[in-house]
Length: 207
Ligand SMILES: Nc1nc2c(ncn2[C@@H]2O[C@H](COP(=O)(O)OP(=O)(O)OP(=O)(O)O)[C@@H](O)[C@H]2O)c(=O)[nH]1
Ligand SMILES: [Mg+2]
Image 1 (tube, protein in one colour):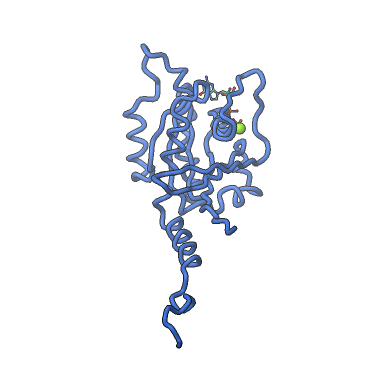
Image 2 (image 1 turned 60 degrees about the vertical axis):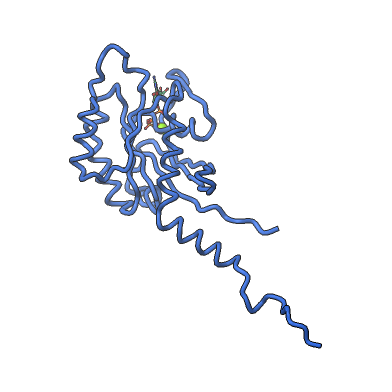
């Protein structure tokens, strides 16, 4: 039986140490959460594929994780190369992780120039309902304006509770399925399965 290849979209995680990139990766891959005690910084590269069904069409997200190693020259190009999307992660309990976003953004536009950029504010569970987060919605809006609206989506997540995580990946998959590269691959697949008119058995009787 012929198997149809589902278009694959490379998505990379970027952001400061400890903001929760590997935790997002773990939620994506296994829907689990690892707390402080058993955590250690990511040292190598890791990736995991997952298929999303959006409006009757399939899209495969391939999520990549690294422990800030993306800024080490020797692995920079392989990490960013061919990325269709980059998730720029900061943590709501760390203003520093928010203030340094523009540096990570610069790396993305330099090394993965065609990638769509998404912004993820993680650790919402640490923002108490009564107290305002030190990173406000206005700060986030300002950041998006300053980077010339390069950001295609803003999400708030908690890897601890799972809140907003699945919704974020669903929305990213939805936005990527509309990209021209996916359309090109789908069209190629359709074309290769087309039955050519002249190959069809003749209906006319020769007698
Ligand atoms: N409360 C809370 N803690 C979180 C959340 N996400 C991650 N953490 C914790 O934050 C710490 C850092 O998480 P990681 O996922 O390892 O962060 P990282 O960005 O991969 O870190 P590096 O690999 O060092 O760059 C861990 O102790 C996690 O348990 C969250 O949503 N809420
Ligand atoms: Mg990590």
